[in-house]
Length: 256
Length: 326
Image (tube, rainbow over the protein chains, first blue to last red):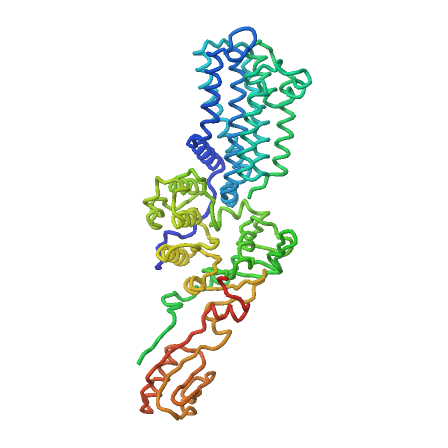
């Protein structure tokens, strides 16, 4: 117990940019290391794309199946990362006191949320690259305005992040796990990802078309399959979900 | 002859620190915190200074709530809290880089490896400790590649402790740092707290272990029912209640009046039963020497000398009527 000088106080926060970057790297590593997360974000979208493109299970309308499926699977990838994956991971971080511990670190809370968003975007970029390569291998021939695609993906990410964080910040971790998986499954089937929306009755379609997954898959399909310029209606739906979800998450999110 | 000391409390502790002790580190005034209808902290006052302060109390006394208010996790319902002169909620950005926090449990990604998490915490600070040296110091070398959820309870605790100190803070809050640890791991944690103190880091720790407070603390605050009911050095607190006692046996009918004259003024002496004597007062090596030399002068062989010191456990029991580890 003699003074060694090893612990002599020299406090200070790291530069903000470095804190956010290191946090984003750690969050991404945690996500890519987690088997269940990879199942959701990589395996399921890839299987859906490959399986339904090459085996004629679902009538996807005129043209090649992959031209219908690729935009839907991109929407699915965004949902799996920004909503399902983020909700489950954040729910358990809250449960295990990770959010609490980081809240008394030099990293401000908004910095943590920025890092989480960056980690989601990095994961999505990897997903989009992987799924695009596979889709091209399956004979995909996309059209349209890349800027519109980017805008749809970003607004979709914002909408799903808001909903995922709202769930993670208010429900128990186990409830989040169950609910996020259930919602993922329901929206996979009912959100125009693999089943064309016109298979449902008109009144069901009216409701389904207001869902963020439907707006995202429909918007991406309008642009990539049909060459539409800017799908304003779908962008509007996503914007409303994004504003509402993020505002509610900001208001009700509990850190412990 | 047999001389017995019930504990080596305070042995080897360095003298209290100099002038810097006068600077308050934590100032809590009239703090009230309620959860629904339950009042967890009920008008609590606490001032801590440099060195190690132990906040001692049974489960549910309000220790964790008080500490978490100081860390900026909870907003007081009323009262004021200042840590290093800062408001922990409104000036969190300024305060957080200067403090280190060890939560009672958790705080680590379940899929993160021990060294990965520690390096991450280090990177959030401007001048962190050498992570490898810290890992070695805490005996965590073998855990480097193991994910948090696979570490033993003791390893998890030591990692949380390492995370609290890696940013070279001025003040460290440790919430029950040795709860559930085996004796060896407890000793390692105690050594680290002593090293922190020696290097000028202030420590506020909560505990419900008496010996931990006695071994480590310059100051002890005893909390019960959401209030501080006593505060002082372990020695002051132990003197505050019943006096310490020295007993010896010898020939019956010794001249107690003559013994009393040899003793300091605040002592008392009596022959309880024939041949069995008791001295009450501040028992220290000088007093023991006085008694034995008086015996030598009077040709008395003290057959059995024992010193009974009042422990914090006794003080706590007297003050609260409760067992600490209930």
